[in-house]
Length: 149
Image 1 (cartoon, rainbow, N blue to C red):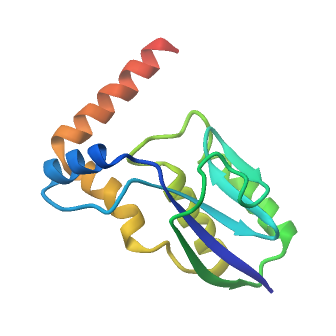
Image 2: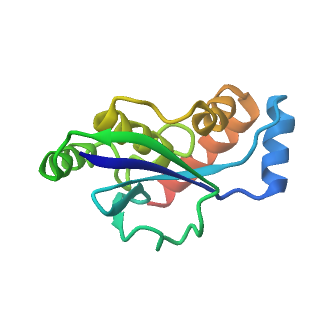
């Protein structure tokens, strides 16, 4: 069996976290990027599913590391599942609030150990999705991006 590790990076600055906290009416602890370390590699979603040598990503040092358990899944099964996930997690499907690195980590961890990522990780995007101001700003950003393509 192989250990499954969730790495959490804080990629937002304090000002942005404070703005989101103010708009949502709830204090948030950060804006997070996550990755999953398993079988000696670190996997994350950024413009597609990316595989890296652990602790060498551009995100710096993780602020939290969660031991999620051990998987009975083989490396071959993982690679097959990642191929399936690439249909959902690719450059065209990325959405800041609906389909991001944290959703990818949640899907992968559930496949590996039948657990979800800790609630605080998805909380920011869930709060932002339910806030009309933030939601409209993000959706406008995506409409603008689509027009440029």
